[in-house]
Image 1 (cartoon, one colour):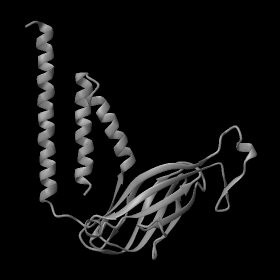
Image 2 (cartoon, rainbow, N blue to C red):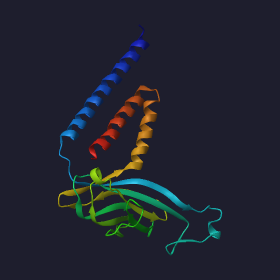
Image 3 (cartoon, helix red, strand yellow):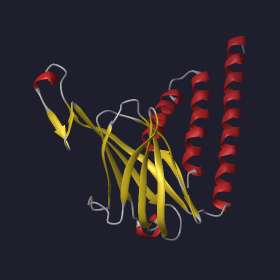
Image 4 (cartoon, rainbow, N blue to C red):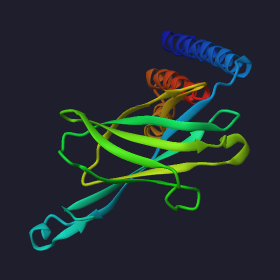
Length: 223
């Protein structure tokens, strides 16, 4: 066996060892998750970010578009799914979604919809500026049934003239708190991880394995 073969075998053994450690840690995380008491959690999931209207730059000066009385050249929809991950109904829910937006008056309209895509009764939402470039979307709900039993999922639609960055969601009440999860970023991370794992180089596979552990842990620990 020559030096090149010994080197390749050593690298392969090292990768197998690292993957074994990762699997062990992941097993420990899953065990901790199963054995813990499930808290009352309102989960806010960023699920969609799409362009609704986009005017070609060549004809922007010739077209006038308004949305709810506001002139726009483009319109974006950001959808947040709101779920009760606990085991009982939660009442009097108030929380805020923090966003970063350098464009003044960018958020034009927000509405909370039920499972049938109709405005949810007893729900209100409002946008307020915290500091320059940062805003909060305030959400108020009368109650929210647990997703595990009722499969109830409501949607907060936010319409804006340009995309904005979601920082987090926060809120707390008696026996419950709020957690935020970016489904869009999670999907992007999965695609990057798969690309690293199949790239063929030992370093890329190692990096991909570490990213896979981090990505899976996000899902395991979010509930």
